[in-house]
Length: 391
Image 1: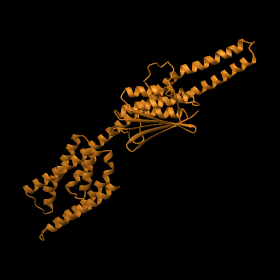
Image 2: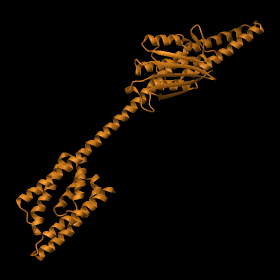
Image 3: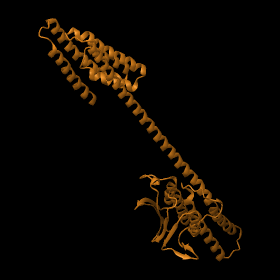
């Protein structure tokens, strides 16, 4: 709609300007035939201008035909110039070079016919120099319109390519995230293998004793039943970690005993040996023989806490090499809060709402354990805060 709001007033103003100049330049001695022909051409100009504007909606179906028809009206019609500009620009956007060349030829022929036939018919004589000037101006205007159309075409193609590339990158990222989740499911299933096998073997052994030994005293039967109950409860709690999406390839022995927060000093020693400056603040955690005491914290949650600290240190080493890391473990109420903060290099700061696959894994690990994870920036520091239930 805005297009017609521009084209129609432009055509009307050009009609008034061009024919106003012709009437003003017409000599007083002009014959009645010349005056009558001028009036007919003025009406024909308006009719052709209206037809040119009315043909613009069809430019999407037949851009070359519309451009040729509208350009040919320039022989008589000054009011059709606005529509001709639109038709030529659109043809330059969607048409071939041959189509544009043909349209340019019709454009120049229309100007030539106007200067050599129409203007002399109404008493306006044009010299060869004036004709050459008209042709050069017409060719320059057409070249400008062609350049505008080609620029818009190139811009549209660039935007399309960038959009497709962005969609491709997003699809690739989704595949990477999904692959990381699948890998973590397999890794945790392998990690839980030994623990679950140990619990279930205990249950099987004591259940077998109760089945085949009917001479056991009541105290032994009660003890075996309690062991079965405890081992079953522990085995069920371990099943919570069968799903997750954390990437972790730093496993020398995937089938060995899995580390917990009791092994945290070893992890910190390895991190410091790798060149990471780590300071640790324990709050509400008692120590015995250089290790944090986590009485009342399940092995499942303790392993989750260990893995979270491990991945947080890995991310810090990867994205902020050489920057000190401050780690805080706090036992408050019924929660274990793990906070890791470090200064990050400016070029490695993630955009808002995004994270790497490691952070995806941390989030899934925390949610799997019934906790929460928060990622934020404070005073130039990148902070990862995980809250886990103390159970």
